Each structure stands twice: as C-alpha cells, then as structure tokens.
View (spheres, rainbow, N blue to C red):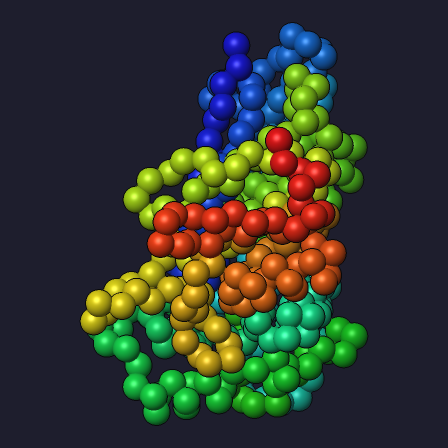
Length: 355
C-alpha cells in the first residue's frame, strides 16, 4: 500500500539550531519502514533509507538498488560531510573558512578544492544576480540578530548599519585558481546560502561513483533526485505553502534528474515596533527584505546553484526575480502575497515539472 511521507527539513548552516526558512515536503510513494530498507514487489529492488545529522540539520537519503551495503555507503557519506564541515563551517573555529575569516592578513592563501568550487560558484552567482547573492553579508546577518549572536531588542541605528555595511562586498573577495584573498582584514565569508546545496551535490557524486543511479538526497531541505523509486515511478516533491503557522502542500512537482531548492522568509523573522523583519538581508541596503515575494523554488541540475539562485531571487522581489529567471532560462516558481491571498507564477521552463 502506498503513502505520502512529508519531510520538512530545517535550514541551519548559518543560524545554529534555528528552523529552516523554507522547507520542502518530500513526497515519496512507498511503504513506511523505519528500518530504512524494504524489498520491492514490483522490480525486485530495495529502497534503502539513510539518515543522519550534518551542518546543524539532518539529512535523508533514499537509495534504490540490489544488495547495497547501506552501512558502508553511509560511512562514506558521513566522511564526505565531515570533511565539508571542516572546510566551510563558520561554527567550527578551526575550519578552513573560519581560519580565513579570523585572519587579518591580506596575502593570498591556498584553499581546498571544495572551498574553491563553492566560492567560485558564489562569486559567479553574485555577479550574475548583480549582487543579490553576497556571501560576505554575514556581518549584516549578525547585526540583525540572525547569526550566532543573540537577537537585538531594537533595530540597529543608521550609523551602526552604515558601519557594518562597509565591511560587506563581493568585490573585497578574490579567488585566483586555488588562492583566496581579501582586500579588507575584517571581511567575513559565510557560505550558508550555498554550502548545503554543495553538500547535496557532493553526496550524489559519491553515490554515483558507487554505481547507484536511482536516489533521492536531501540535506536541510535542499534536494536532488535521479532515476526512479523502487516502484518504477519518478520521484515526486511537494512545495510547501508559505505559512508560518501550518505545514501543507502548495504544489507537487516531478523534477526528474535535477535538484530542487526553495527559499522563503515566512519562518525565520522577528517583530519590533509592530514591524516584521525577515532573516533574508538585501546586501545593497543592508536591511531585511521588504516586499511581497514569500517563496522561490528553483529546479537546476546542481543543488549548489539552485540553492544560491533561490536566495538571490528572494532578495530581488517578485517582478525582478521573475524577469531574472526568464532572462537566464531558469526553471523557477514563485509565490507572492497579496491582500487576497497568495499568487503563484512560474517561468516557462518550470512548467514541464508540474504534476
């Protein structure tokens, strides 16, 4: 008998122990078996469920195959993720990225292959989005109380905002081959908007290297699928309605062999003086976003790229985001709020994935 299992994941690489801004509901039509593995009556294959913790959140991985060594595979996956955290976490004080942030030196330093890959894509997406995605925005995130520090009781002063904003800017970060440098000693790089997506890509590459081509990988809400479920059906994913007080499905999609990333502002925020302040910061003015766009979903072959693009489009706002997606041939789906409820829009490329 089939059922729909919703997995709503937490977004927390930048924000320790806080809830994911937007969650994807994973729709997997299968038999519920908590042990993680069960045989298929249809294709003679089994579906293996691997679960664990990473980046301050959880991961859920479904592998479809015959006679897979699930324990060995999970060990290899965990090793990949531990290495990723040691390279890119801002919560691990001696991580590669933390050491770069703590250093006052302006001299270029050699960085790992993984860090090169993520920073290179972050810079590319930052330029593509005209600065909407900026991995140096961390000081502003902390200023508004959405980083590791406690939330402020009052809105930051204009003077403090201007002073903090002066520390931010992709133009202060330079990557040449495998050499990374900064032009100001207090530059702070935080890859939380893209690193979880990279983690998904890293895990899928490991899985495929082990000869598995039917899988679903999800880390903290970021997801990538390939092939088929044990029943022979394509993987289904549900986009959540952008409501802070409940969890329900807005739209079901069939992403085929792609990644899915969703960003939104309806779960993590604070209120002060009757105004709501989102955790998503606009790098250009240094303030939380303030527009009608509440959710952006992007489908792309790379989870890392989809992750970054969905955040960039959330910063842009409804009209700019949709125009940006169409101009760049992206499969994007946006939800905006109005006085009469939510309005959905999608690019032409996204329509092929609608169920």
